[in-house]
Length: 357
Image (cartoon, rainbow, N blue to C red; front, side, top):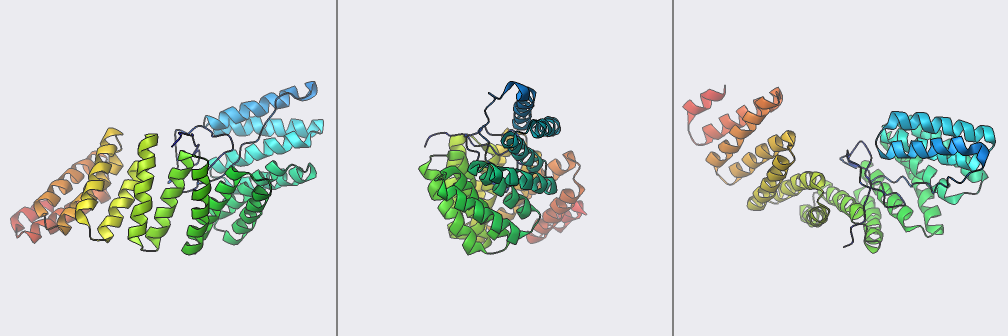
């Protein structure tokens, strides 16, 4: 598979975000991860002399957005939009508004996304600019999804998909399909969610977009897991891990290995559960992710108990307790102590159990 880069510049993990130009992967991000589509405008900076300042501000705002400096990006883009409006360049103003919607989305300000995207959509329609309309519709659909207004989200994303299909824009189709899948999953219509995301997966593989494929595979695994079809879930999670390793994306691997271990635990395959939790633990150590280490140790203890290996479980729980103290997490400390007491009782070591009162 070809290594095409995919930019996940969102706060949360859940959305799949696939720009048109194979943007670079953002350093932070989402659960989330979450795929969220935000198509990058094809901006030309060869403007007329009178709008040179506005164009420079637009370019500056784009660069600041890509660097994650959202406050500075908003200021530059707002100034750019106002100047383009003053010069009567409504097409460039629409481009600036599209980026403002994107920055607001990255910042989690979904109401502002809706405001900017509606303005962008109106100007794009005036200029008969289809790509900007697709962007605005995508922004609106994703913002309404996060605001849990699912019917509005579906309406905008369906229109986005229709326009993308008319233009034979595969990348916009991929994003719209996946985002529709996320909306239907949030609405608990899991079969519909899987239908859309399978279509998205087919297209993303045709484009050999590994970053997009990784996120869609994770979303499909989550959908099948929610349906309690754990065998199907493991298939997509394992495929996702293969792609994550290819991309050396340890963040996604840490997320998905947890889900994969949980799925095997639900299937009663405890040895496989332990293998994946152990791999997650090692990656968490490599990345100095103490929270993932603490979680993995707790999960490993539970899996060992399921196998009747209480001494092994206690070893993991002791390590979890140590890390929980280190990060000053009182709740995790209490959970680790409770797990240790339960394991001590299981082997009849009541004196040892008293140590964890």
